[in-house]
Amino acid sequence: MEKIKRKSNWKHELKMLPGYLVVIAYVGFMVVMLGWIIGASLSTSREIFTGKVLEFESGFHWENYVTAWKTQNVSVFFGNSLLYSVVSCAGVLLIAAPAAYVLSRWNFRGSKTIRIALVIAMSVPAIMIIMPLYSLSVKWGIKGRVLLIALYIFMRVPYTAIYMLDFFATLSHDYEEAAAIDGCSANRTFWSIMLPLIQPAIITVTIFNFLSTWNEFFMALIFTTGKEMTPVGVGLLQIVNSMKYSGNYGGLFAAVIIVFLPTFLLYLFMSRRIITGVTAGGVKG
Amino acid sequence: MSMKKNRVLIFFFIAPTVICLLLMYVYPVLRTVAMSFFHVESVTADLDAWSFNGLANYDKIFHNAGFITSMKNFLAIWIVGGVITLALSLLIAVILTSKIRFQGFFRAAIYLPNVISAVALATMWVQYIFNYDYGLLNQLVTFLGFDKIRWLGTDAKLWAMIAAFIYGSVGYYMLIYISGIEGIPTDLYEAATIDGASKARQFFSITLPLLKGIVKTTITFWTINAATFYLWSKLFSPVQTEGSTIVPVIYLYDTVFGGKGVIERDAGAGAAVGVVLTLIIVAVYVVTDRLLKSRDLEY
Image (cartoon, rainbow over all chains, first blue to last red; front, side, top):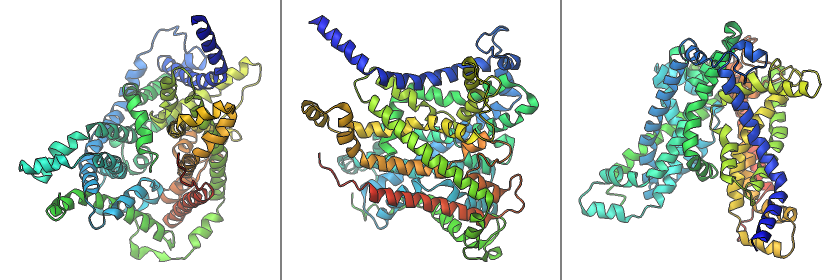
């Protein structure tokens, strides 16, 4: 009996072989690419150009990371991206969570319009809004980090509100009724009872907001006016562009790895949550 | 839970979001659309510096060689890239929903490029995979005994860029297809297997028809991604805009904010480009919606 079972399993695996090959090739390519980049980030430019990246004949050149971090300003870019991502993640929640809550609870005048507007706003391309936003920011004299953070918050409000709306809608009204009997104001009920109840949704949506802000490029390219406020994406482009003057390829690949790491690590620990979240929020829009 | 009692609360809870919608979306979109019908030189010009010129901006861009080239490149990305990406992601989705080991790992690994910084990813492709001197592809080519290829030369560059973009995009569409396939009741497949339908037959008679709605969604998403394609083009031609990789948004950026080879800035023409791209997205959405009308299938 045992034998037959194993044989049929083996047979099944063989039938799936083409499938395995496709996905293994796909993932294998990425492993080779990442492996080489990590190797190159620890090699000298000469080793990179002579094709000796994974031999480490002259040892591991950790100083590439030091050069990238200090001389090539990656520390500044990194700090900026961290600041933008963390502050805007918090800001988005403060704006979108209350809105999602009232939209899930009451049908007031304009509530339907707001819902539809949020869904449409999610797919408005950035090119349709950047020009007026640019002229507004100049007119109102808003610039620098404050401007970028404000833009990043506003960019994520529609998605965040729509995502949270579904979760608030699943909560029973009993919570509010019980809180009201205890004399708890609606405002306090929201912040201390209802909001904590959707904590899983908050975590998921915040991960997505973090990823999106960390990886944002277009707005940053248009609205940053100096090195001191440049986030990682645009910063990395600047490093690439200055490569032909500095010639430090090891440093370039070290910078690539530094920019790559934060979201990669986040993904390593949260991949299950992220993968379920992609189709939960994204597809409906 | 009465609405009257909570009027004030509702107002203060919804107000910031309404302000966000008006300030970030409604006003800018309306102004961009309006601007496309005016002669506006500087993007920061006040309304009284605008002069109405009807469809002249549209006429101008459709007679501009740079814009025409960018539209051709857009079509290549949209059609060729789209067909390959959507087919490949559907194929991988089917593989990863069949009885295969390490499904979770493969899904996570294939989605990975969507999570990491696209700038970092594009840099990996440009500086390693396609590099002439030490790149992976040329190592493979020399190993097979051929001459090195200039992957980032004028002829091949667009396709190199599209290939890199496809590789990174597949994971996202794969997850969408997987969620669609997993929503199909398994007893449909069981019944089909009992009736002796082959796997291929099952795919074409069960999976594909029931995925109509999902296919529609992915076509719309791909169209948005192709029309707003920017970052990869910038990373493949970082210093100066090149005909081989120019896309509409690059053209828009150069026209509005200035770039090498742009003689006069023209915010009105830039706005017209934005409107054209948006119309393309809306048109594709409407057409696929008509063609792939998913009569609400009950199952």
